[in-house]
Image 1 (cartoon, rainbow, N blue to C red):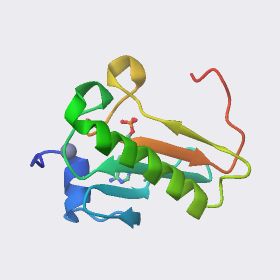
Image 2: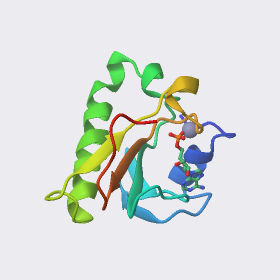
Image 3: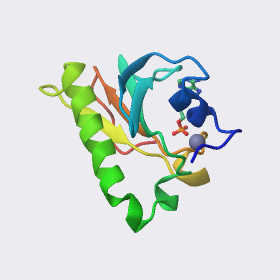
Length: 116
Ligand code: AMP
Ligand code: ZN
């Protein structure tokens, strides 16, 4: 179910343009508009789920699909050997700014730890 006021629902529907690198019925991946690394791709479900915290047992398979899509993106982008970072921000303390579940795939440079 899409939400009319949700930016990522609109990207998933193709109503707002994005640099899409993967699309199927349930998952879309596109380049972040403000990349934080040489490769920065967002992987989202086409279904509106507000965050990881809003996911339910019925989303178990979808959550697996999102992670496997993140893996596939990393492989396609040539990140697998050097490694990469997979992140989902949740809520205010997590730094979430778009309230549609998304997985960041970041790579192409070494990542720091702990995160800020
Ligand atoms: P978060 O802060 O974890 O909620 O991540 C939201 C991400 O969405 C940020 O990295 C933004 O740069 C990115 N973003 C916002 N608007 C767009 C857009 N229209 N196309 C692609 N990425 C976007
Ligand atoms: Zn949405």
